[in-house]
Length: 278
Image (cartoon, rainbow, N blue to C red; front, side):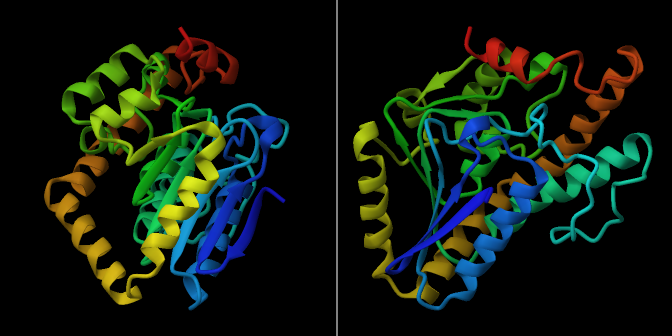
């Protein structure tokens, strides 16, 4: 199973389970995550949802090179009302898929009416930032590291472009311009994380926080979450994300024009991993 689901009292723990690929996110995982989140929302006994990653790393981001990459597979679309990407050509294919699987799903998960906490260890790279950022809170181990190195592809950041809101404009530019990894301690200073804890205590500390939140009334939590999300949107989050999603796809099209059809600018999973570690 690409995603595991476990109920621990009032807390649902949703775990990405592709540790052999550092929990790289293919479409099968995306829809398994969505099913798990839906299950947690529909369960009246669940008050808080924790998102975790099995193994040494939270996630290496989008699957751009494993044997189970499923970019050409159709799935039942849940996030946006758009046609299937399979069989479409050129920008139509990529725009349709990324609108659904990346931007659309992340926006859908951001609106989950129950509090969500990302529990992050090891790598949280590129597309994995999106998975953590849609959660209401992030608890990270002291050995966690983060990066969005996709500017190396000629692309201005991942599809769910929340960088200026979760990092602040100056830190967002540093992260994007350099593509370098940044530590959990740095992320905490920039305001991206709620807590940094020892690796051995990550699960315990995350569950303790979830259980503390779980004693609050469900409706109050849902309305407080909606209030903060609405405030972020009034500060331009949603409209800014829309505008950058267009730039993101212009970058893919530019790469395809100048690189013989390669929309990733000659990069692959290994080159992106090595680049972010410099």
